[in-house]
Image 1 (cartoon, rainbow, N blue to C red):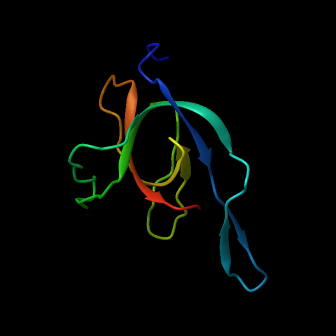
Image 2 (image 1 turned 90 degrees about the horizontal axis):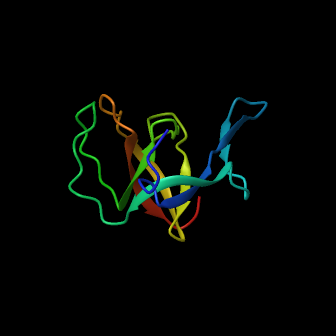
Length: 117
């Protein structure tokens, strides 16, 4: 449960589906229809300095958002297909999702702007 007003913005989630051809080649596809629409967030178009991830990587971000801890987003990882979000009339690739701290009501998500998925 979250405090009313803590997440005044919304985003649409586009989760890719992966299909495997008969020859074993994987292909990622994003539907023209959102997986989930109108999910609560606090959108931060100009993120503060990004902190290193758990692996020590220095992330870069064009935007960030805070999402309720119950929401699940999959970030860009080696050999995995990341989620896309549409927020503030722009497309973003999810690049990093920070684990919530103890008793936190939100997770911080870093986003990289892209033209379309």
